[in-house]
Amino acid sequence: MAVVIDKLPGIMQLSQRSCDSAKCVDFLAPLLLRLYLAPVFWMAGTKKFANFSDTAEWFGNAEWGLGLPAPYVLVFMVALFEIVGALFLLLGFATRPITLPLMIIMVVAAVSAHLQNGWLAIASGSGIFASERTIGAIERLERAKEILQVQGDYQWLTENGALVILNNGIEFAATYFVMLLALFFLGGGRFVSVDYWLARKYLPELAPRA
Image 1 (cartoon, rainbow, N blue to C red):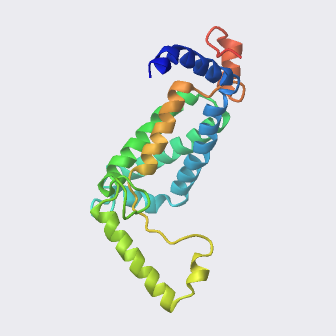
Image 2 (image 1 turned 180 degrees about the vertical axis):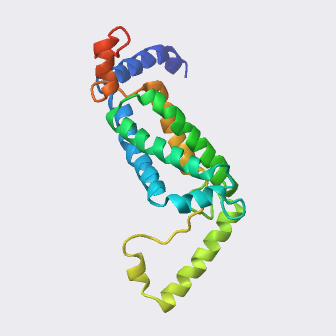
Image 3 (image 1 turned 90 degrees about the horizontal axis):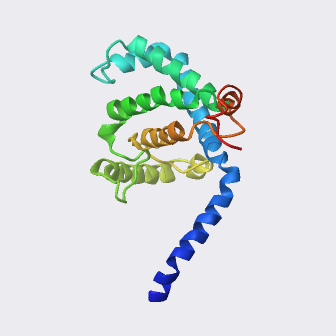
């Protein structure tokens, strides 16, 4: 143990140098975050516009919806920010500013639509995030599978994927929030973002070094 402790500073320096050698491709992290999130927000925004009235009714109805004020205005603003945000993230343009309204949308969505369902997006009967709700859902899922195996073509029903129950917890909203938060601090990244080339041209003293 004493030998390991004595060598620890050298090991740490070697580890640091090894990790630093990968900085030449550090643009990949924000690029992949952007490319992952862009279609997520594009699909969310375009779906809201495609089903505008139904979405607004769900936003505003307090009995079976979210009970939010000014639902038509909210749907329009949320969908607009999601579509514009998707395009900006794809291009790496105004990356840090656009993450702010998108993070707010994720927080509101998590609190208003998902929090009461717990963490899990897909129901699970075990694990630290399992709840009475998800355990009950899995019990019903197993019963549904038994019925389908006896009375239906279960192989055909599941050949493109297993049957699951949507729990609709905060998991996805929280994950997207964390990814957006990372982009807020990282920016669009070097080389493959409009932000990088604009900064190189107009703010060279602030542009990330190549």
